[in-house]
Amino acid sequence: MIYKLKKPVHGTIGTIRYTCTIEWRNGVFIADEPVSSGGADTGPDPYTLLLSSLATCTLVTLRMYIERKGWDISNIAVNTNMYQAKKDETNITVIDRDINFLQPVTAEQRNRLTEIAQHCPISKILEGEIKVRTFAYDDSETGKQIKYPNNDITVVWKPEVCKHSGRCVTHLPGVFNTQAKPWINMEGASTEDIITQVQKCPTGALSYFRNEEKLQ
Image (cartoon, rainbow, N blue to C red):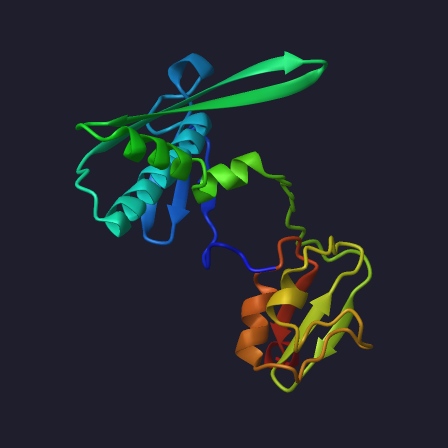
């Protein structure tokens, strides 16, 4: 399991409804709901963000292909929108993508670029099988705790909280191996690498403390 983004998209919300602060690898922007839904419309809403992703991916994919072919097509526009309907008790979502070449192109170019657009990475995601996993962080001290120390830190595992996201075993297999006993090998990586990975646990099943702190 390798995540697409090295740094996950991070969102927070306070008491100003429904203003969300979204942090990405290179900055911050605001997302919001339209006034009709109780927001202030200070930023794109979730549907707009979804459709923007498809529009952006389409344009970038087409530009890459045009450059590779050496075609003289300088400007392209894309409109994306969606509607939802119900068929046989199943919710169906249809996304329309309209491509407009803002200069004359040949029929061959138009047909080929339309085909290329259908294979942009976001198209493949939307038309493939998608599973959304949701984890909630639990920092409570209750329940069973198993401790794994090295010279510097002690990793605490709460098995009752663990939801088996797989992040630890795939990203730091030298330390976390469910086929081994004990399943956490504190000599399998540097202390700092272990700390970095533990901090990525989405449920709080893994935490750590520095041994020197417990001695004070």
